[in-house]
Length: 495
Image (cartoon, rainbow, N blue to C red):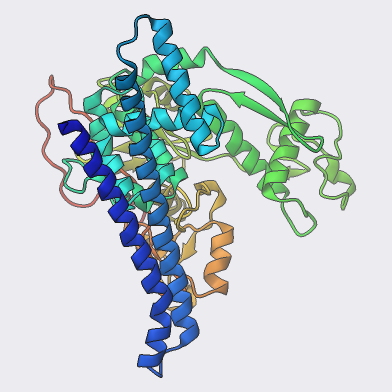
């Protein structure tokens, strides 16, 4: 009886939240008309535009609340079906009942049994051991996509670790909350990257052991697609894949110019195909810049592409000092990817791989400490610092990595802006153009925080921040004093 009352109360609360959202949407529809009658100076078009955006925001909360209601109803039905059926006599009976429940939910929702099974699995996870995520979904603070990502990333973690993952992104009062990047403030793809990084750092199993198991599965896959196209997928160690991709990017950028009509993505594909099929010898029209020059058909070989030197790829590897020394086994961070095993980072640093730049982090607070580089140039150090601070384009929900971005003065040089970390951002080329051709504008930055963005309607969109955290300190070593003052890297970058 008590369990039934609790379930009923949850459903009633979810229904009440939906009614609240419906009332808010109705108020938004009436709001602009009332405002125009009460204030003759108000711009009715602007008011209606604002109401549309507010309505979209409220509609998103409605979708989240509906998803939370579906979760409670699906989980409730599964539990009640078990009670009605009684104890299963054999494992076969148990499997049959599960199949029956899935088929029933699929029929009610008019979806495939696969989709119904996924919904039931996610619903049971959320109602059983991810209460913060379900509460955030029901209040509209996260979307169904965010909730599913949380379920996927928490899978395989012990209950305590799963609770810490939830608290990190959803509880501002947690012992170690996310830095300005709670789950609902991130696009789902960006939240997945953040959650995966946290999971790798805090997984109870060593990343070395998990990487060793996964490396045995490396392979190349050919996947046919429509319209005479196909995918060629490679599953490789992260450092290898990152080095290949960045080298392709560097080679492709070298081919760009006024006579080259292909996009960067198309150039990457053509460079890769030429290297793989031609092996760096012969001539290939696939690399030619539209046939503009006779010598432009030269293939990629070594450090040249179409007769143009290929810039060296520049990949940052952020390594805890104690991990580099072999004292701890904490993951390192590979720019554009995420956590990698410390043995991989040590090999990249010790092996002299010229495409990888080592970044040491302070064992006291996890902040960047020093960049290893072969030559001292302040603009280059500033660029590296921007990549460390921002990791990607800072525009809301943009996922373009650092190598596809431009260093940009937030306040233009002509308007008195300085060349310092506080006045630099790295938008991708698309959002760089958006800044200069529309009313979208970045806010000031700091050495630790990328710029936020202000939209033409005046809405403030917060930027992501790197979720640095102090590395684990071995019990065998004496306590270390807390960090004081700015990271040494700020001085190296000319701040």
